[in-house]
Length: 233
Image (cartoon, rainbow, N blue to C red; front, top):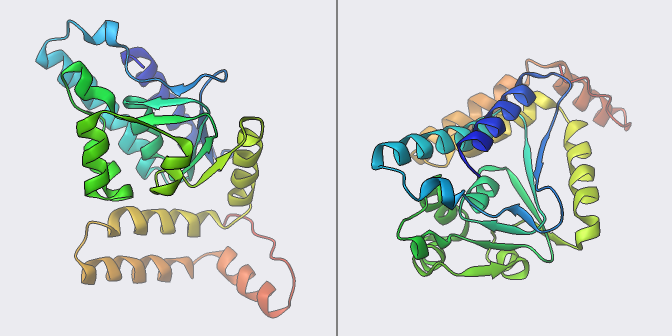
């Protein structure tokens, strides 16, 4: 992952956000070896601090965009997810991993540290102690261990990974889009708020769902004991 590919990822995510026909974003790696093996060390080796700052800011802009975009995102981790690769997966809402996937933040072995949100999102997901162990020690963990500590949601055979990711994406795409957006917003932004403020955010977000046709259809279908026909409005 270098400056150019990170810019491309941000561009693609922006297109997906603005395209009404795109309901869910799935990120995966080309081939079978890696999701994202990490940043391009050859490009980073001779960076001055100001250049590194610019690169880290672009990466964080991209991660934050994916994390906060109103549409759900799924990381289908099909191999190495190291350093920046793990941070990209962390920015997604859900992480599915193939059995051969490897995760880690090995930046310490390069004389640096995570710069795309690894020290922030990883502790929130797996706890501060486990996150410090991974980041400070720079170790890799396999998919089974990643599942055990809550880093990934599912572990699948490699030949089933994309099928299951698409199946889950299709399920989400058929659900009320506004309610999904409000759920994501409440979870993401409520997490760091004081409890009373977080409750207020949830209450107001829930109330806004009652302005949609999908809420009316969902409740009507429930009372009529039929499958709802959501329209995304």
